[in-house]
Length: 177
Image: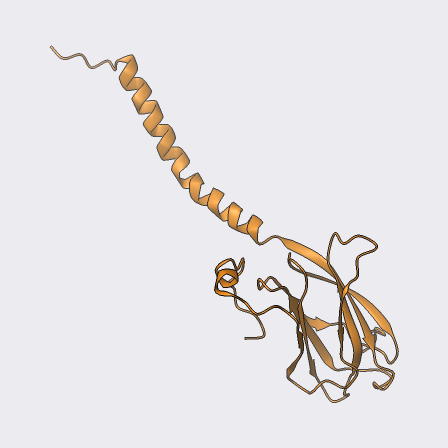
């Protein structure tokens, strides 16, 4: 006669198997959490000085994209302009807060202007989150009107070696192409 009551060792095995099956879907969630942590977001402070040769007020749409040599990027689709708010006026320095991927030293910055006014920046500074009071911001100089509808700016990033390219932390598409 065969006994139908489970032995203590088979009960332990069934419990262990049930635990593994229940926890298996959580492994994918844990991996997603790790990936999100690797691409954590930071808030940058952006200071923009509008040229004194710029129009008094502008309705131009101004976008910004900046980042580091590892392609961690922050992107502002449209900075608030003076279309009633007083930002980006002639000879003014405006401060904006912009969220983006945390980086390792801003080395490129591009602006895109779209409109009829011909807005012209003197310089743009990016202060990274957590920067000490004595740390210098990354400053990019312009001094002349931006072309209309074109990404225009500076790339001071070091040339990527094959080893650096393999260590990139972000492979997502950039608005710059």
